[in-house]
Image (cartoon, rainbow, N blue to C red):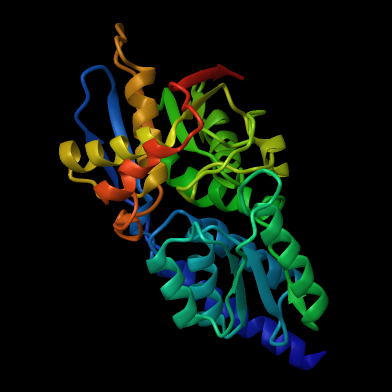
Length: 336
C-alpha cells in the first residue's frame, strides 16, 4: 500500500508540474466584414493541440482515483492529436502508452508516436461504416485482454474530458471576454463542445453554440461514409454528446475544409489544421449576408497545419478529394 501511495504522490507532483507548463492559449482577432471574430489558438498548447486539455484532465483524474500507477499501461484509440498528447504526457509520467491509430493518421503524427511510444498499433481494415473507428475499438478490447494492467481513458465516453475543457479552455474564454454571442466548435468525441457549451452557457446569456461536423460523419444522424481528414467527425454518436448544449449544427464537405484552411492562411496568416479550416468555412457561410449588430464570435484553432502539409495543404492530394464518386453536400445547417 505504501508503494502505491508513493507512486500516486509522484505522479500527482509531475502532473502539477505539467499543469504549470500549460499557459493560457492566446486569442487573436480576425478581420471580418460582418462580425467581431476571434480565434483561440489552441495549437499553442505544449503538444500542439486542444487535446492537451482533455488528455491532461483524464490522466489527472485517473491518477487521483488510483486507476493509474507504476504498473499501468494506458491504451487509447485516436485519429492523431489525442494520441500525441497522451504519448507526451504519459512519457513525462513514466507510464507506458499504446496508441491505436489507422491509415488516416498523418505521417508526421505517426512518426512522432513511433519515436516516443514503445508500441504503436495500426489497424488497416475498414469497419462497416467505411471508417476505422470500430476496428480501432476492437483492437483496444484485444489489448485490454492482453496486457495485465490497463487504463483505457475512453475519450468517447469519459466525462473527465468534458471537465478538462470546462475548467481550462472554457475558463480561459470566460476570463478573456465580457460577452460572446456565438461559439463555433468542431466536433468529434464531444469532450470539447461538451465542456465549452456548459461553461459558456452558464456565463453568457443568449450565447449560441454551433457544432461543426464533417460530411460523412454520423454524430448528428448523418449517413457515415469514408472520410479522409482526421480530427473531425465520427462514425458513431459518442456518449459525451448527451452532455453538450448545442443550438445549431453545420455540416461541411471535406473539399471545403481545404478551402477554409487556405483562406485562414492567406487572409490571416494562421497555419491551422483541418478542423480549424472546417469551422472557419462554417462561420463564413453562417454569416454570409448578415446584417445587424455585430456579434462577438469565437472559435478554436485546434491544431497546427504542420501535420497536414502532405494532405490538406498539398494541391495534388486536395484535388483527389473531388475524385470521390459520392457527390458532396453543400454546406448544410441543421437546427438542433
